[in-house]
Image (tube, rainbow, N blue to C red; front, top):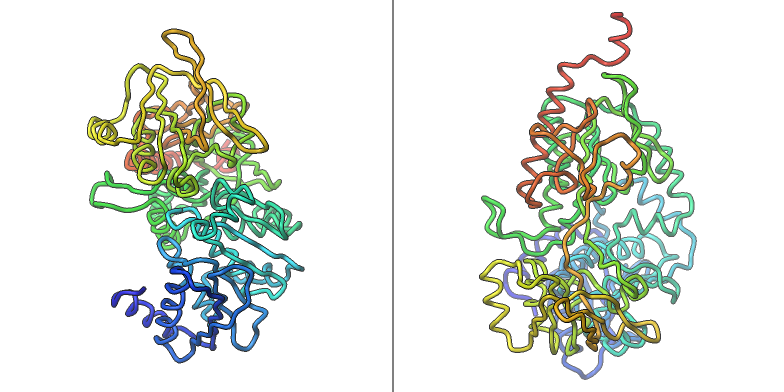
Length: 529
């Protein structure tokens, strides 16, 4: 199961083990069980502190539990093989189980250990899902740190019958004590916020106590991070308040157009950006959702950003970099069947529709790429485009045309998502030329129709917005209000690209620097008068 390179890598990591751990497997006679036995034997052979036995009695076969030898109540269970995107999760589970300290703030660990149970988590993942590892790792850490918490992490492809029985149609899908808990990516802090009733109040108190920043950036994507690096390097106290650090990067798989980087993946790039934030003494405040902007009353005064948890952050200058999100269809049935057939991430959820008929709505690059990827997994893909022609790059269109299980429907307006018994079963579209209505029977639909800026919270702030909700900026990244700048996909800048956002963020950071060195604080202006 493990090649020589992976074994060498594991041996290096296992030098950090401090306590003995046991791998306890429940196996059958199938190929996946054979592969699981082979994997666990290879792992156990790499270090004396790792033991493996095969007398488990777990409910799912194949599965294996990683547990501390001296405290078997601290354990995590993998059902199926955690390879692909989840191999790192397996490595971390082994290290944390063996006493290697996680890279988590001490107050977060104390919060985990203080949780009362029982909290029995079950989480479904797919091996191609780049959003799943964060949830897998969060639940793993919680289970290994608190005996009142259990976590069973289930590879959906191995347990397809259970996936169908429990109506899992999107991953990551998390259940708590047998009931649906959350569908989608969650960080450790987000999981804790949902299970710890006092988490919001604690976070708000910590944020309220912060001194005013010289530069506060709202948004933790490429634009926000680039801006923060520039202002921090100029010596200004800088904070980044991010609802979800990384933004759209966390939902982006392959990145091949970043100069100097032949290929990377969004979550990996987000991790590198977070590391760089830490190296530049930037105060990163994650899970900080902005709700209201109160601009300074006079030039040089403090701007205020009110957060969803009730806290308020203050700063002499602001850089708004809240990015954008997937645009929704806005048709009947879309909200009702979200995560029940309606999906937005083909990489994450595509494997759940293996052998089934699906549709992709949208003929731009993202839509055509989704159709190409899905065609390798599903029985049939119907690509629906509103316009009379596709907008994707020619090379993508050529690849699409070569696929035998893809049907293209152009000049079509999707009008409804249909369903029955809690899951979608098709869609209705209108032929824009004839006006005729048609129904397509489907197991799933992937919506890929562009982006909408995350600027709703600014509508009553005095910030000028375009007719599309984008923040209007000039060539220096300045908004219509003194001391407030903006960058990235939430602005009127054309071409919503990672490299463009980074450049715009850098420019906004430099503009904020120029503003600060030329503008005295309001109290100094008042004293001078």
